[in-house]
Image (cartoon, rainbow, N blue to C red; front, side, top):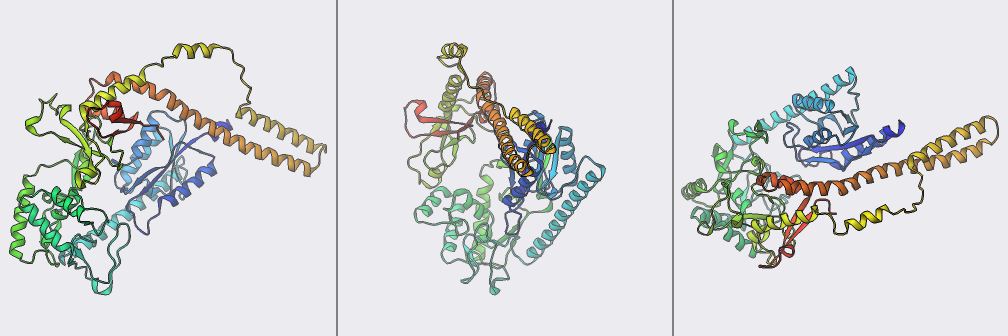
Length: 548
């Protein structure tokens, strides 16, 4: 019974909403949680689950769902979810209590390292509810403060965020804005009005004129990259997406934009079709209801010219196709979405379609696999990865199907392995860890009897007890390691073969999204090498999901 208690599994959950100087770092949270795990004699089932940059107001995009799925699959008989404090679980009392009840029904015990209340008692449940109420109160107060601050800046003609802007600077004495570092300003810059940068300001003006005239931003970005232009805020080359964000803000033309209250959130269906209220994070101009004149100067001196450039740019953006935001996509478009990678620069690859006049007829309402190609993002935007190759969805899926069949097929020497396994082999007897613990318990009982009758001295008994204690700790660690190793071995030995067979059986009838989910269970990445007409195994390297 004691061994069973020592083998209780634990999962550490860490959440940080915003990376800032005064935050409780993930390392500190993990240290506190590991202290509780060690005190309770728990065994960690996996690496800590981390939600970095996630708000506690909702649960739809957090890894609490992964813990629920682990419990529903019955992976562990006893599972303890360890938090730092209860506010890390959530800052929405209603949803937090609903998720706590769900975990409790599945047999998951939730503990907080610094606010450790016994949720099995009436007083403990009351204390947990109070801590969640306090967490929600703090979040509501912080939200009200930010709303008042944003309204005040809007009345003054300032953007709601006091951050650096491409094409602008504060003054000669203020240090430049860096990502993840608190902003530092001098006395002259406390008003928050930015000045046009003499170097980047003209570049931004040219970008507005180029985009408003219908020019391709990809060509402009490549010219900037070749000239060594980097974003002062990020220190990285300016990508097409980043340049669109800069232009869409209208800041360079003298505007400050704000969202209307009804635009702050939107309803997005989840995988089951149920509407979920989510924060509106779209950066397109039509998602902002107010473009007001700001206190700062525009990069184009003539105000009338700024209005004309902005109207032409907005007309062009209105004609541009709208791509769904990443967080709004509930289904993968292709079977290998998010899995294709470049082996040279290490970035992911992006899909693109052939020209319309060269496309083949659609299959089931979707583009023909032959017309979908993949290319390196770095080379597509900056042309700085010349060794990257192109991938074709039709060839990739053909190679994946062959690879799945090879992995699911039994080995060629299966009969020899079976015959070899049937031979009697002398195996050295190794006492199990449980047997060693039982033997140590017997030695302790004999030691206590010997001391009680005076057969040995107290000093000799103390030395013997120290040896027994050291060996007991070593055996307990060995027992935990053997259990974890057995789980990993079973996962690597049984899960892949079953997965290969199941994926191959369902492949033909599965949708691209279903194929993508199935592949992610066994495939970590597909690397595309350069070369045309070479064998598919040489062009596409499949990296297993359990590869180091």
